[in-house]
Amino acid sequence: MTGTLYGLGVGPGDPELLTLKAHRILTAAKVVAYPAPDSGDSFARSIVAEFLTPDQLEIPIVVPMRVERFPAKSVYDQAAREIASHLDSGENVAVLCEGDPFFYGSFMYLYERLSADYPCEIVPGISSLMASGAELGRPLAARNDVLSVVPAPQDDDVIAAQLANCDAIAFIKVGRHLQRVKNLIDQAGLMSQAAYLERITLDNQRIMPLSETGSDTAPYFSMILIYRGAEDWIASLSLPSTRGGSS
Image 1 (cartoon, one colour):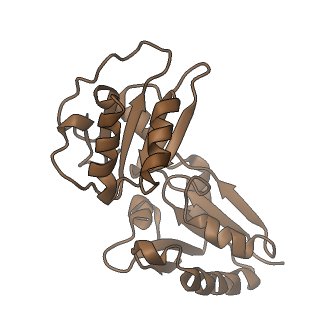
Image 2 (cartoon, rainbow, N blue to C red):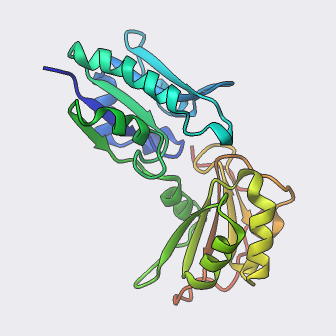
């Protein structure tokens, strides 16, 4: 009998948003793996750090944070081999994933390598998109609204088409694309309906109208939300420039 591979969604950052199921599996697992940058600490690990114990074996999956090398095939190949060795010995392995494992989550690269050979269970997590709507205090979509999720690195014509046709839109992976996406939103006449959010649910979260962002770039953990659908819950945004987190 082999061990089971668990993909645990650990949420957007606030440890209290970890699900009870993820907590149960995490604390019972003898082996815990998680993505980590090639410089600095693992964000996924930091979310659940208070629940880890010294007797758990930790496997950092170090992924170079460079656009041209992601996903880093050799990194996931090696991580899959190491995790497989523990599964073969009968140990369960819990793999941490920020947000939700199957919503742009890094866990999917391990899943495609291991799920055909080992029992696998996905534990969904609260994504930053859901958390952003809650922290903004504005529904993401309603009734028959179409909500589009658009990675900011997309081409200008793709973004412009989404802005022209969707009822609600969420830009993720904003980072160095902030000013370019901001210009496209302005050209579409949607600046007054656009909110900027970063580091949601953390102590240093920031929420403001997109028009008030003073930088050309944004942190990796940032998002832009726009609503232009049929509901009349918002005519324009009047948010404070910053707002403390709930953690």
